[in-house]
Amino acid sequence: MWGQVFTFDITKIKLNYVKCEDLTPRKEGENTVKEEFEKLIKEAEKARKRAYTPYSKFKVGAAVLSADGKIFTGCNIENASFSLAVCAERVAIFKAISEGSTKFKAIAVIGDTDKPCSPCGACRQVISEFGEDIPLIMANLKGDVKIKKIKELLPEAFGKNDLL
Ligand SMILES: [Zn+2]
Image (cartoon, protein in one colour):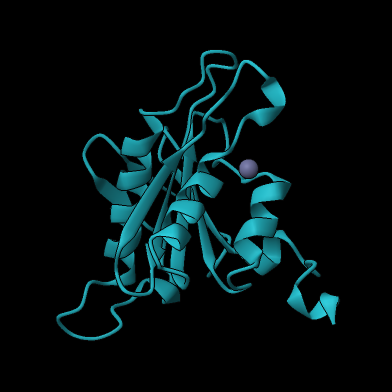
């Protein structure tokens, strides 16, 4: 069930998920969705360590899993001209797009937050551009994980059909 909170120990890479229909194996021999999500959270956490945040000290990491199985990571990057800061999610997505991957299976974001790290409105809009059903895996360093589809986080998003 999307939207449930479950916990994992990021230091031991042992995730403890609640029962979740969407985390069952797709096919025998293939990585399960659970395994894919675990890996994505790990990669996001690694990218978080590279965040450039001399001003806020608020570090965020993100990882995007493309339809062809590649993972692109991002971290937030600040600037002395504060308004030029860019979020980890957008860095990861823009990296993927610029490398030719435009279809996404899932996106993970992690921060040292009390609740699972939630993407800002701008990032929700950017993610929504590439599919409203993309699962967004929100995590924090305590091991809380919450998964929601982007359309739940940004209902009635402005999209390409609005330009017609
Ligand atoms: Zn953002």
